[in-house]
Image (cartoon, rainbow, N blue to C red; front, side, top):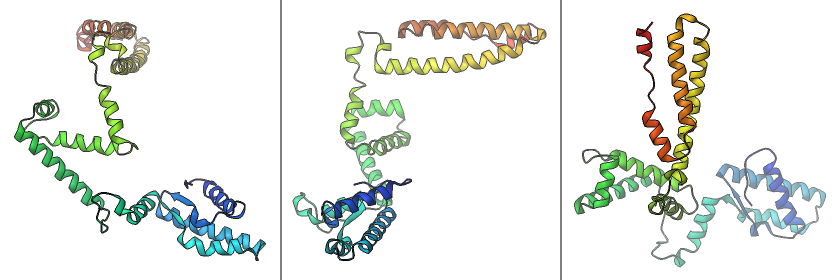
Length: 270
């Protein structure tokens, strides 16, 4: 059972626990109730105790309910982190190379360890002059300051940790960049080509909307006719480009031929 904060959710979960205790005759210490925070776990334990006492007022001779009050002290009502830590502590001998005196590092220690590991990896790659690593450095940073690349790696690491299977997820995403089989087809048919063209179309739609508003304002003043015509030509070109995003090559060639008119020139023609 997992407790979630929100209107009524805690009360519903407490009722489910009481139902299992009374109707299904399951002892409270045989249930695992997982919350998001320690405070939520404490609140859940207190609410369950209150609910048991209320039931006892209705059934004061119920031995099962009386026993649950005692069992509640060792019931697993906790955060998922606390539960996992307890499981490891109780079964550390089944894990390889794990000392029974292990402890959980705090946030500062974890950050320092990540930095140390990253520095060690970079130093090794520099010394061996790893070809792939050198390419990565040239693309994202420089020998003088490789900090941006390190920050990017840490950011990616932190992001993938939110996934239940981070390495598997990362391998799947890396494979999406394997476009060898896609080189023979239109790039716009690939997942990345579609994303890029969709973003370009969205940008064009926003630009066209802005220019249309300017065009409307200029159309009401005859003295601004030259500016109006310039905006009109820009709009036509952007509309034309938006309608030619059918393939990557077509969009590329059309974009190369698109020239936005210089407003300063229109001003000089006034």
